[in-house]
Length: 377
Image (tube, rainbow, N blue to C red; front, side, top):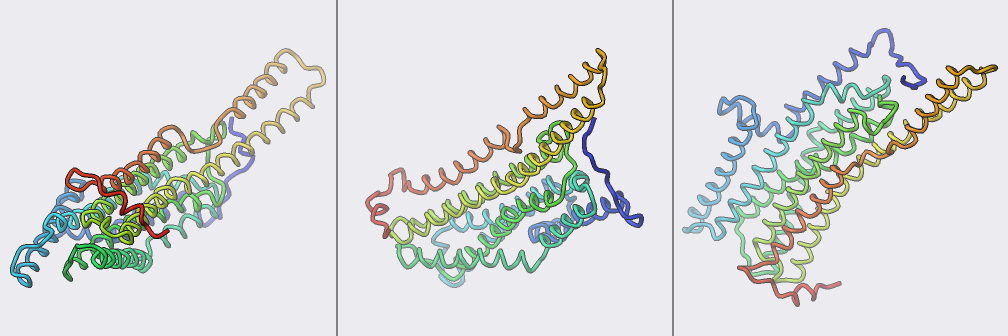
């Protein structure tokens, strides 16, 4: 017995089916508009593979091998010897391939399968407009390039600081590899930062939620699961970056250690944002819908009670049912955060932290903490 109190109104020229189809088509266009998808899908077409998770992994693996081979060839041509950090080069290749492949796989498992569910969320045309605007902005290629380029330049600066303040020595190709790897990570960071804002766009107008328990609406559970996956992948991105960073022993300098710590704090911030931001807006929408339905039920009970001049046993029974519904609705949770979501969040904070601590171990021995304690605070 929904107590929505409103009806869905659409212009005669634009039915709900038309608006849903338009939004679904826009969501599906991500296959050719996200940088990671463009890169991996191009490889899939080159190798004439079927677009599957396995094909994405194959292309990512080939990309990683090509990067390692390029680093080795550069060292042989310009240095006359193998690369000084062969495993580090492999790690840079892996981070590049993982970042692009992970975004591609994450996209394929979240957006296309749930396009119809996302399109079912808006209650009116304003809701559809808000989602359309968000997806158009999210798919902006200049916006993606600018974000990833900024990340890549930060990596170049980081490597420069490490080289100037530690015993590590790099060639031009190492800077290029660092830029390429973190540029690719930037695509994951782009998704990790901007996808959570989809919750704000989706809740800008009233959503279609289950009136008796808004927090258990399918759309809310779908969103919570998707953001949970995103948070875990964000944590993996940060972890691999920390592993790559500590390969070059930044603890040999207090300044380099400080820069490394700043990257960890940045990772924590990104992971926390990816979890807290969407759940804040989802929870706000849930609470608003719960309060709206409680008000509707209260009005219904008051009106029904006022109409009872000589109530019968059946009238009292019906009134009791209304009151029972009201009591049940007051007890449902007002947040989208459940036990599973909270567990994912905690795990996502632990993963990069363990990578950071693991980086403090050099050949089985803990780094001299006196160096870290001498940081210039």
